Length: 331
Image 1 (cartoon, rainbow, N blue to C red):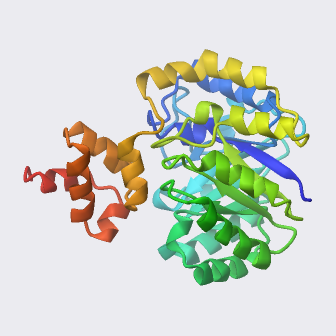
Image 2 (cartoon, rainbow, N blue to C red):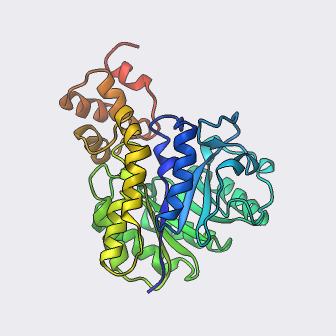
């Protein structure tokens, strides 16, 4: 059985709720305390070509992270770069021992050549990297196999199954795991990033772990499950599960303290979690942001179903706030 690694994405994924404006106190507190919980990888932030603010967890350079990068031995530190807001590669400096270790790259299906070339340059700068094919469900199993075979050539640290819209049932998820385990080079970790719109994150993660794959795996989680839409896999739940099964040494009290001190106040202003609108976006293949825009316009559940059916498939995927207004005849 390979190593089971847990990656914390509390600040990075949680930032979708508040535009990453957590405030200096929360950013510094979370970056100081989460690496002490027992996680293997800690994802600090997004990297984007945007102005720096100490109250916002977005950085344009590795050097600008210096104030929050208090490295704990044995923990890898990561940042995420995305296709849609691409950090110019020249803004990413060469890796140093005191900087982040890992870059996670969000890849769009129609930008695979760009992703491949960008990841190649990230590797040349000395970083480990993970390939994050957003909305992995949009790939047929054959297309997913071909993606894996191509990126095997770059030898990434990990390649992920990304459930962007939170719609994977266990059966469907494990079909992708089977393909990945068959074709991914054995020395590359297989990752799982869940969203919880159908409340499948915990069950899928446990099923993934219980396969006992020979390769290393990575499971993403966040404190209180903080994240876009219905949220992510809760760190405290998967940590307790791993402890109970003798394959983790998580400090659950430490996680709960982080929740109480920092994350609970975010929830009070920007709540996340299961709801029927998020359930509908998952079952109908829609971007979860449409749940929020529908609610803001006062749509009933029945009207939401009509709205989601009304949109062409490609409009469902890329969020456009004007669509709900068009549906209501206001634009």
